[in-house]
Image (cartoon, rainbow, N blue to C red; front, side):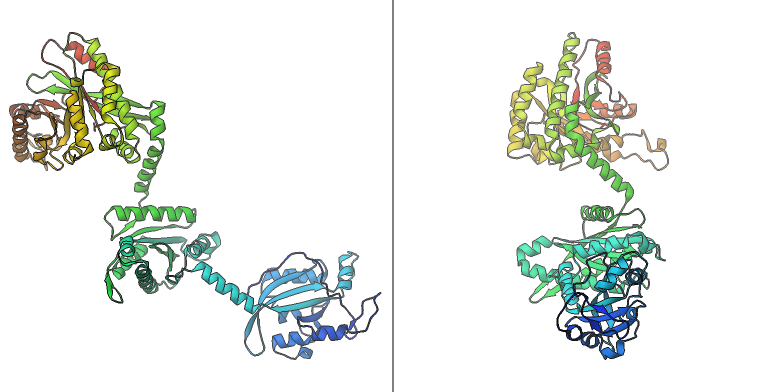
Length: 633
């Protein structure tokens, strides 16, 4: 039986004393009046008893007898602590002994008492010294206290009301499942040290699930039907939990955390296999359609699974991991469960850290451009370079564009970053032009994200940059990915046409891997196609006999590239091949008519001064060019 005790409080207001001879209540010293104290004590609506210094009942009133279901006279001589269960736990028993010795002014606790007829009740028990004897005990002169007043109040109705209110507070009214508050209460208790140091496995697991497309149910059928579907889902989850009950830990706790989110808490889990089996059972249970009156609805769920040691784990950390894993399950295609992966989570955390520092990094000047040469396939001369952005991150070192460009597009920072790239590349191209006046001027090509076209005035940005740097429009080339260009309509198409009319060249990057809608090439203002490196890699080997084990040349790649080159030339477009790494690739690309090549065969991305050295060593001949942007290395 559990109870709670209170600390020091004021002595009772009742103020009776007791005689050692017969336990009768007598008037207090110094007071006059009719001797009615015994009748008041006997008929008082509060159950009371007088207890002597030995802890034995001296006298009990009728109310106490009725409360306990016995004759009050039969209670005389009983051990008071046994009547009200004060010895069932060490803390309450110690506090009671302190009051009995006069070292503590009061004890108040709640106990579950058993009546003589077998029924139980909740009672609030108060023990405190009788006023006069309490004074002698508190004086510290060593006198033994004369007695105590024991009072007992039936609080069963109040406890029942509190229990009902707590149940309402801790349960979801739609599904009648435990709600978020109760779930986290149980989770917090399960993670406390004493809960897993007493023979448990020391592990805990959570299946965190979200119904896929539930909003469409509410939007189509209304919230009433949606609530009924949630209740039906709760019933199936509860059955799953009951079937998955473990002899040691019992059934997992099923809770509705809000909206269409549910969680199953597995205490004393035995490992990831147990949680994986539970997640699979949940998905299987939700697979059959739900029959809701005249409607037949189907629903799937995505489940994030986390299982780990309880030591060192907090409720917040566990649920953050579960939420992240649930997001992975949805991103991976929904209607599945996904297990938490620490390495994948570390990547996510790094991604978030990069996203949070992107915009400040632009202001702090942490970005730089490197340039990779483009070479004419016919004469082997440098015709241009591709400038690739690098982030000199103070924590993670030098980062390639594939680590942060997608983040910049997501949060919109690609717009200011793109302006910086455009301005820096154009300034550098102009400096090369001024530094090598005897060489033909080189053009610079800047990759442009679709969001830059939509979220900024790209035409005005380009015009302003060209005016500031003094670079001629025909020496600037803008690259967009094939998927972006092929889907161009409305504003993007208008922007591309305006830039082309200005004299700026437009190139399609990674051509051949996206939509490849050739009809667009006839109406878009495109002047250059950059073939994706996947085609060029098929040229890597001169013959099948020269290949390493497991490496087979693909002759179809050469046929496809040759066809695309011929088509581009017929449309008046030039072709650049990316990822040229061997001289054999270069010679075969030259043979089929490719205009320029780019890759490690010629140079890795280098600093601007290295490009200046290349231009300085070039003799008189054809034009040269430089390409800059945010492309991949």
